[in-house]
Each structure stands twice: as C-alpha cells, then as structure tokens.
Length: 411
Image 1: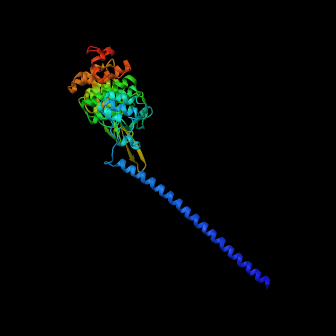
Image 2: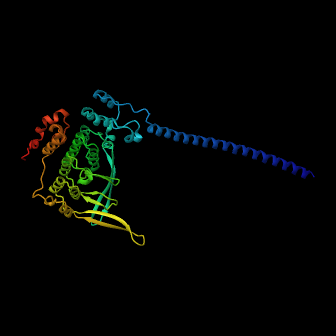
C-alpha cells in the first residue's frame, strides 16, 4: 500500500513535471513563431518597400510631369565649373533609361552647335568610360538567303544616342566625336540617310555629305562597303522607301556621294512579301523610267545582267507550301522602255571631284557653295591637321591644308 502511494505520488510529480516541460516548450515554440513572424514581416515589408520604390522610380521616369535633371549652363565658364566638380557631361542623373527619356548634356550642346563647349565636355576626366559608351550605336540587321546568290539584307533597325532623330546631331558634335576616336558604323550612315528621306532640307543633305566624307576618309567601323540600296532606301519591317523610288531632285547628288564613298552599285533592296524578293538598284531605276539614275549606276559599275526576283508561297493539292520564284530581266525591261542606250557602260568609271559634287548640290538647293561644301572640307582639314578647326575658319583657310580641293570643272 505504501509503495502504491509512493508510486502515485511519483507519477503525479512526473506528470506535473512533464506538463511544466510541455508548457515551457510550448511557450518557446510560441516565442519562436512570434520571432519568425516578425522576421517574415520584416522581409515582406522590405520586399514591398523595394517594389514600391521601383514602382515610384518607374512612374517618375514615365511621368511627363516629373522634375527633369538640372540643365547644364550654356557658357564655357559654367560648364568648366561643373566638370571641375566631377560632373559627367555624357550622363543624366536618371541613368536607368538615359537614351529613352533625357539627352545627355553633350547631346544638348551638340544640337546648339557649340564647338567650344563640346571640346570641353569631351575632354572631361569624368567621361573616360561613359564617353565610350555614349559613342556607340546598336541595331538589328537581318539577312535572308536568296535563291541563286548570296544573302540579301531584308531589314534593319537602328538606335543610337546621337542619330536617333531629326536635328539630333550637328556637324560640330560629330567632329568632336571623330576627333576623340569615334568611327562611324554602317547603321549611323543609314540613320542619317533615313533622316534626310523624312526631312529633305539643306541641313539633312549637308549632314549626309559630312557623314559620307567621314566614311571616305576613315572607312566604316563594322563594314567594308556601304550598300547603295540599303543606305538610300531602308527596308524597315518590310516597308521600303527609297531614293531610287522617289525622284527627288537631290537624289542623284546623294546617290553619287554614296557611290563615291564605296556603296555597292549592285546592291539589292527588299521589295515584296517574302524575304526572297529583291530588286537591284539598276532594275528599280529602269522600272521608274529614271534614265539619269540608271546612267549614274552604270557609270559606277552596275551590272545590267542582274535580274529582279519576286516570289510567293503557294499550296499544292495536298496543302504543302512551295516557294515559287519569278525573275525579271533588267535588260529586257530596258529594251521594253526604250532605255537600251543607258545599258552601255562608259569606257572608264568616272571619279567625281568632291568640290563639283558640292557645287551641284549648291545649285540644286540655291545655297552658297561655302555652306554646302563645308562638311567635306572639315573632314579633310581634320585629316590633314589632326585638329578641329573653329567654325569660322574652315571655309577661309581650308585650301591651305587641302590644295587638292582647288579642282575646277575641267579636272
């Protein structure tokens, strides 16, 4: 009986001890859960806060009412003070979407055509890396195989900090870029040509001359040869708008500048509903009854035996698709249109004088020769001296550095 009582008392003590332990463990678990909840809450709150900050930043960038970056001064002393303070003229404060929303101070100075400030900005110590990224263009260039010959370009997309729109770059801006090592890419040339197609005024055409003069002097950074049709008429997303197709009075001058810069006179342009459709530039000129353009192309080596190609997808009785290709002879079309004499190439490929080309463009635009020829002469002077000359000195002193520009029409 005593042992039973002792056993009962012992069992009761064990039960109470176990209960206390279970209670303590439960309290510990509850405390741990509370701690985890607090930690989870902190993590959730931090994540939500980060998302909210990003959303606020994105909304600020997208908002037309947001506060823009403080504009840089337009005087040399003010610009020098900012540069000495470590400011970078090739960046904006909202650095996430720089090119899409705001222009860097260098870009703004370029549009003002302020050579002194552009030179200050380009020499900024803070710009050693960002300048390289700014002097860069990117894009998409698609080629498709063509039946019976090599690949043909079918579409191109372009974007850059400085060739993205009308009046987006001045001669002075490009001069400084080239002086600091920028070498034009094929898409840069195409972007300038595209701008001139949309805005065929004297400034755009002068910029074409300036860009092509740069190509003549230093070549291209990424290609060995310009494509005449791809440069004159950009096939963007299947849509084609070509200088060869629309007979603007300055087309001949621009086409000749392109050819002088090394454009391929046998270049193909995309025309049609499949990537296999193409027209040689010469075929397109004959099709448009443009004897002047056809003669120009022939004088630079266009081959009349290059035929146009048109194709379409058709289904047979089983529903299988087949590509049917049709060719059209350039020579036959020329005979049909009475342009046979145009198809006879000259004995010697002519080498045009840059000054004569500028004079022809000046006549077309009713502009002074000095204004039109300046882009070509500036690049020649830069090549001869290694320096960017002040704007007012270029046309006055250029012949001292470039005596070969003394050519006359008898050259």
